[in-house]
Length: 241
Image (cartoon, rainbow, N blue to C red; front, side, top):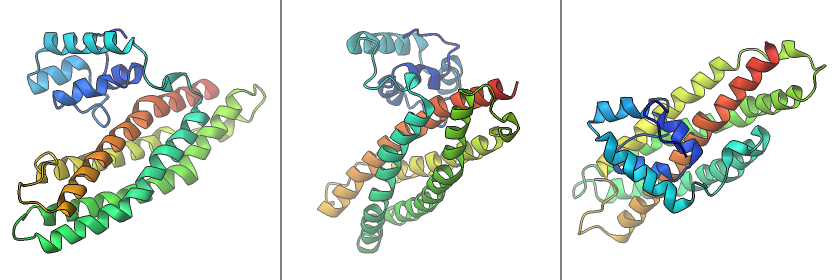
């Protein structure tokens, strides 16, 4: 992995996903904010680039510069199936239980943990957005990308059917931004998912599940914003050139 100030955060994480943990320690958003260069985020957040560079280099050496999965080498259709079967499935399975816990904690602990009402509100907004978002991807965008990939391998394919993926992708990225914003608000309202000393087990489980949900969401958005969507835009540009 080459470390370069002018590379975007998303590009570096795409080369080695474990770089995300380094960025996280500095509060650098690698999914929704992945389009900014390392130089830009260091300046905006007052991060010492030299220290960040040393940590990224140490991480690359520890991991042998090899991520768990080489997502960049996967065909878009295979990556789409992975996203649906791993991340979309995770979201749809976890949301009902998290909504149940968030509502219960907000009702029982509204006085002892006033921010629990905010957590419930933010998570419900996040849930509605995400569930609608997944449906649009699975029914419209992802099938289009798969057809695009198939056509790219056939020189005599009808190119007129493949124009305009940029706007749908922009919309998906805006929805990713909203999801990321809701998740940041939840993190702030839970004091970085740290339950009060007096918290019951339901609160503790809720906070751990929310932290797990955030971790999955970050990788989910990263794979789409920084790996799948750029590939799809490039394929369409080449096909329609």
